[in-house]
Amino acid sequence: MNPKVVLGVCGGIAAYKSVEILRGLVQRDAEVQAVLTRGAREFIAPMTFAVLSRRPVHIEVWGSGNEPSVDHVALADWADLLLVAPATAHTMGKFAQGLADDFLSTYFLSHRKPVLLAPAMESAMWSHAAVIRNREILSERGVRFVGPASGALASGHVGIGRMEEPEVIVEEAWRLLSAQGDLAGMRLLVTAGPTREPIDPIRFVSNRSSGRMGYALAQTARDRGAQVTLLTGPTELPLPRRVRVLSFETAADLHGLLVREFPECDGLAMAAAVADFIPQESAERLHREEGDRTLRLAAGQDILASLAPLRRDQTVVAFAAETDELEKRAVAKMEKKGADLIVVNDVGRRDIGFDAEQNEIRILGRSGFRELVSKRSKREVADKIWDAFLSVRKARGQSTALTPTLSRRERE
Image 1 (cartoon, helix red, strand yellow):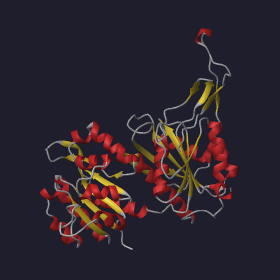
Image 2 (cartoon, rainbow, N blue to C red):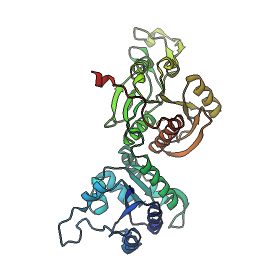
Image 3 (cartoon, rainbow, N blue to C red):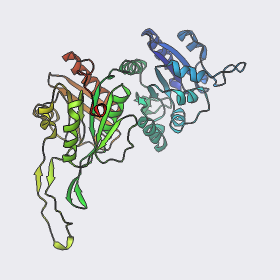
Image 4 (cartoon, helix red, strand yellow):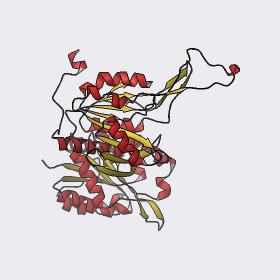
């Protein structure tokens, strides 16, 4: 069955490239419905899209004005993907704030399948606080982004803001279309966030993990059809919807949850930042008046390695946060933990990793698999990790879930 794409085109000079995006999708046998904003029509005529797509172009939410029309609702039932290229700052702002004053923004509120935006704007606009916040809102709601790239802009300036090339956008759109439902039937376990290890009743030792990477993994797995359980440490992130969530605070708490949940899952993504060292806890509050104190730290348990006796044939993804010799240290950890894959990133960089919106990683596998994922949103990185996860299962002949078992909730 041919995939169905709604192609939104906004008012920017990059609108002329949208024709090539349409052609690329059609060449892959996609059915494409074009939607042009008023601004887009200042740059390119609707007839161009109508001829290439062999469909009337949607322009006004009111339809022809001669008959009742709720085209945006019918189109939402039809489409598999909403792709907006170029996506302007104005349209992204409307999407983020839930405003609906034309066909495209009205349709966006009705669309329930994946959304891919290809932004295009001047560098100063892209880096403006309002645009950054709108991007964060959209990303938190599951919207994906491709680009923008760096290069020559319409103003004559050179910088970030140039729309990605059409072939890159088509490839990313096709990847999202292909990914829909590819984790269906699988029970996936994801850990996220930091642990807190008490020093005394009011103090604790923790780390800088925000939980963003683990939450992104849970959300993307959910969107790709998996039944997800998220084990989360203390974070300030909103809990993802349609995901079973269990909370932990200490490494011991997390270990207890994993011992209970791991045997029933098909795969584990161990993204939580577990304490390497556990302080010797005082039952009473330590007081400054008592003078200097020495804090004794004991090496913590390797939780992932400890799950080996409970393993049947689950696919396990480990994570390593390093500052030097990234691949060497990651491979050693992967072997020690018995993981199938390990994801390593450079936490010495402030623009990625801990508490950042973006990440840049290397995915390494026991069979020699190696992929460098360049800097992008954590949602996009999460998709790449699940792609690698599926490649491991495919190599084993496990394209879907393991032999079905009743979950604890089902047995109860």
